Image (cartoon, rainbow, N blue to C red; front, side, top):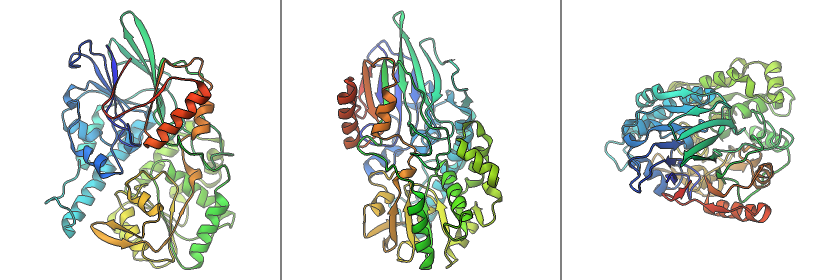
Length: 476
């Protein structure tokens, strides 16, 4: 009997990995084994440590991988999977393939940088500190990627085929409609991946890709995210508040530090900052996008204009490529990154990772957090256990590179930037289903968020809904 096994993003937001096994026997070794997403665990130590363990299912026994989108919590463990012996195809949309071609090598590069820095200052309990995987190992894994068009039916085995439909989360993001054939009949299993905002720029200002996930589903089983299952997004425009925060910070001689994911969130923010500068809502101070992948990410973003919102198209027509804007700097080398922190003049620094768990943002926070003139601005979800969540929740000090750093800078959060649908938006989308699924499994959420969404779905839809547990098997 075919089953789904939740190897990640169950009981936690990150580490998305859902195994579909067509085995007819209990051992599971004789079936075709398909992995939906292959993400990194982030946040709490107990979850992060699982990144260093072998997969519960040996990598060499997994036959294929299907990706929903390019974010690291859905793709970042692929180089490690390949390192462990996986040799099958990795399916993704064209934009996701392009983005992974930048994100995964960048992830390996940053891990090598972090390991080298820990070894230099002797701040790791491991001697030597090692990266989870290297840049070269990430590059090697890209050879297995295969681009698949939206709406195209793709056969992966005699029993399994899938179709991509739009999720409207980030560039190239998709939901996976998986058809499972068994015993002369078939069932449709929908894997939502991350679901984008249902409405347009009036509700989600600055949104880059077209709003609204694919509607009118008729799945038998649904596996869906619950990241924002216990809260609603603010409905007001964030720009006036953000403009005031920036003006106040620059006015007192400070800098604005924004931990932001390099894909989607950074592009959204730089367009918004540019527009506010042109409208004289904020002063024209230098803007640094400090990421080794920043230029390539922008180039990929501009390449896939078929996914843009009308607002994004207008901004590009008006201002051109961000790579050409005066006063906007895309810092790719370590030397360029270090120069940012050599300046005492006000500036806006946008750097990854978005949850401040790794990458160059750590260096900027280590320098800027102790000074009350500065502002740390969060514009994305901060998972429990991450450094970003600690700062957001008001911790007076945090550990960075083994050193205690006092938090004296102003800290602010703008929730409107999220590209995840909230509870009311998810329910609005679910109401478009042509029929009720026989079973719905909630993943990719904190326990409270998943439970609150389950309760809301049962009350509003009267569906059969369960919260997935790590390593649990669900029959198809």
